Length: 552
Image (cartoon, rainbow, N blue to C red; front, side, top):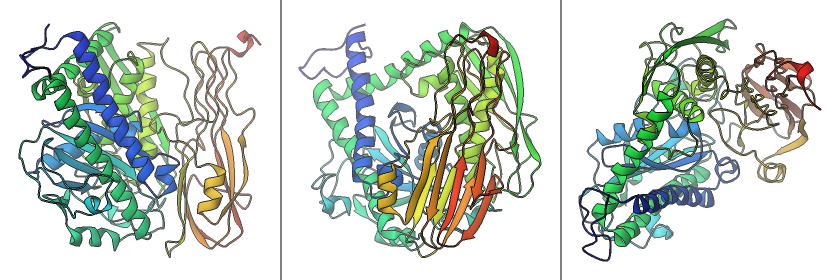
């Protein structure tokens, strides 16, 4: 293949790109997504974003196909295409910025607020993403109407209203209780902030100053994407870069198809359960049949339980995100992550089921907990096709801990790491985020500085990893004393069913939640007085292989 070189900027393109240019453009596009993430993290006020990095950024083409992503949160990234598709139905224009969080219209759960910006490099802009005036919409007019792509940022906001501080209730029964629900809405139109929309959002959250700053950081991240894309057009030529969009997708699709073709054809089935939904303690079943046929995979969740009264319902986009993550894990991790990785994978779930609920179903726990169990279930099925690539089960939960005051003075949210399952050739990792989350922890110093909280203990749970030829990773124990009256919400799993070992390995230890030393259910929302201590003990990972085969 060759690149048109009629001018010094790479020419107008001739429908083909040589491999060297393709590799350069691919890396530059990925750097655009990474710079978006860095801009968001640096600009955010809330520890949830600036410390834990519970956020994700990505770049899409004009057809809504993922081109490049930062290596952030799997459950965010795999579900982003639904957000872009929802915005494209709203007739976006250059200079617009859409905000959304509605799980039934492109979102995941309400705390995950997504911004989608149409990209039209070359438009006249105001004073730039780093200028406060520009961020608040006080810019000169913008021109141009040729949308070439979309910048997307998604961040977990520490409060979006609803029945409990922190917007992560364990006992919600319908989505209206979980916070402010935003279908795709123009926050910025033609470069100008719609103040009535921003005021509406900020009037419905408990910490409007922090939310305002975090929303502004998301806008800055999206504006960074447009500036960087314009520089790529200047460097390579517009048509060459746009041809690169297609080429990187084709490249990833072809590599994923080859990886799938190397797996044995067949249908592989598995089931797993969630431990109640906060309304009932009865097990809730997820069933999957994974069919490998040549270069394609079909993933069918028929047989999964119907949607629930509680909030573990997961939008189909979340279920898809979990499947995409598993496929990425089982294929070559060096394959560039983009739309091409998804094209060989078909995913379906019955309408009205746990994995494709109908409104007004509560969903806040589906994004964080059900996504983890979908991951476990699909891994279990595909272990029969690729046993040498699948680890024992990890902790299988995000261990969501939310502590908030009703006056908005405290909105702390954390997902707590645990044990990674032992691998076929090595021990599991200790005290890490597993599966669909990829956040950091909140450092003790930052936590105690930002909140009226005191960390009493933060340590590995020795012996919680399952024994085996290779040992499962250890879980964690985190104890926090709340120094003000507050509401505590716990959304957790693997408190009853342990993470499974494989090939003779022992199961990992189950997790445990305690308030002032007394065990509480896996899904709990309770008001507590100042001086109360909340302890979360997270599960360990399962072991791999017979314990007596271990070499010390």
